[in-house]
Length: 460
Ligand code: MN
Ligand code: MN
Image (cartoon, rainbow, N blue to C red; front, side, top):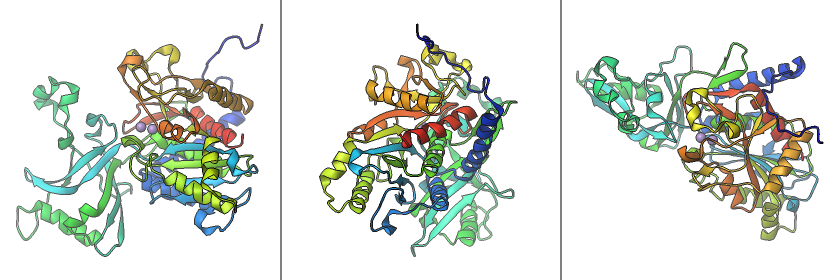
């Protein structure tokens, strides 16, 4: 009989030596800082470039030719970055790609956000991604983003993160007057049009009722902008709090935007720690996953193929379209995205035997989708076996699970768009509690296993 007859799963910290535990905890200290510092796709893109530069990566455009061991990256409109470490094998043998997204659910400002109502100035928001609206009331919010002025100058906005900064807030209804609302269905009790952020209360000197005008005066003084400039802006409201340890044992991290910066950060660290792999290693960080991977910064864009064509050209003087196509066909990808951890408070939406658990290791999701695997990206068993073998050989502890019970919902990732490019792909990421909430929880063991797993894959 085989020794490992049964597939036993257990908490990764059980029986773990102190040295490894120390490595995990110190790795997670840096991750917490990154999560607190970079709360939007633009900020995470900037942070990634900073870390890549420090690690000896250079812009792809700055190189005329490439050779094994070279480290290059390409930025997509400030909202995504793809980094490569050129491998020893010819590019037509394919790439080992780890792809994650760096956008997270949030509240965007509308193009005409500022208005006055009920003797108060407000900013109108339009939520981005799958949020539970009630979670965004009565919490401190910070405003991040850019405003492009008429003269083309870019104003960087970051309000609400500093010690003395103001924060923004959407006031919730008091329980004393919530009788009608309390009787409504949850899906009807909170409306997108009511997620309006308080902007100011002091009236302007010119007219005692003009609170909106007074807010605009402050913004004009501080940023030199006029009301029409909001049209040419991307301003995002995100939770103003930072990432913190949770659990008396400090075994987990609570923070905004684990989905999917927990996979993005670990993938980035993995490529930074990759020297000269056999196959060319790729860390691809994309935008717009939360709204369907659309747009030229999302995974459905031709950006990656265009960059790959450029890369192939710099590697090979006999460049042709077939080289790029052949490279894609021989490539493998880990779609690095988060899963839903079993939560005993909501046990009825999970199937325990096929659920993932916090700190039981890197999560492999063979297929995503909803109901009868609708819209699923379903990895081929041969490829699943290959990935399990890579992880086992590198001592990466993993678990395999589905999102939840069959008929209660579902979801997808960027995996299907990579599969469309004829790439072998499987979802591999970190499982979370409270996914898409302003304060998601991830296990430190799982975070470290993601880093180890992505690195092992890039070097396979
Ligand atoms: Mn995600
Ligand atoms: Mn998501």
